[in-house]
Image (cartoon, rainbow, N blue to C red; front, top):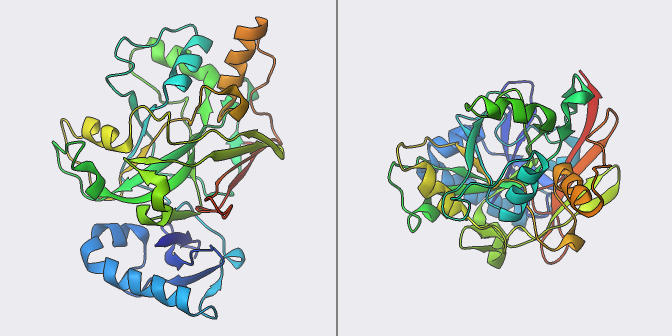
Length: 325
């Protein structure tokens, strides 16, 4: 199944069931008005949602056009937004960029931070940037949305708690990060609101591309209309979503609607490009001794999308422009 949250003038929007080709949608209600409703009562709502999804696939006349709607992020706000850094290549490059060494536990213990989740940007919302000196960067990622997930969930158990998969632009303010981390208390000002793809999908929609808690497909990013990178999100995701779930549940449980990000998708093969500016800048420093690529400027446009093996969009497109606050 595929879902989107239509902007109906309310804070949490209206849950819509979306056709597999992303062209049409039907309201999920009246008893399931928001995605959080559906997640809170998944066992009860799933049969109805599946029936609606089957209907829209069988009858090509059903539903309104998705292009006629304005879409929030699937969860316009969430109980928790937790982001990992599961791609070793990205960790190594970005740490070098700020003069830091990777942790000794790089390959054995996932890096995790907890971001702000009270306000998410919509997939086509502008990125407000008060000061370009802050070093605004995009980070193209995959994320999963969880069911109620108990403390002590093991890697082997984790799959059954993954309800949905989405894409993320985890916006970062790179020049604010070093000073914050030096305090020893983690990210805060350096992590403004993230944006998510217009549509969230159940893992079965990914077919064989969903394997062992990873999405084995390229994630494409464009900057100002030019392809910036298309690294494969699967093979080099060192810690799978199963690993990340086992890690975060070591000491506490999580409520339905919790979102976990993969971290910036990254491949060692440089021909695949990158999913953030920080990586490119570090490669420039390694190769030439200096960073020349600027961080995002006012007016820059970032687009993020993933396609299946038939070149059909799975989650729709994140399409954002950087604007002055």
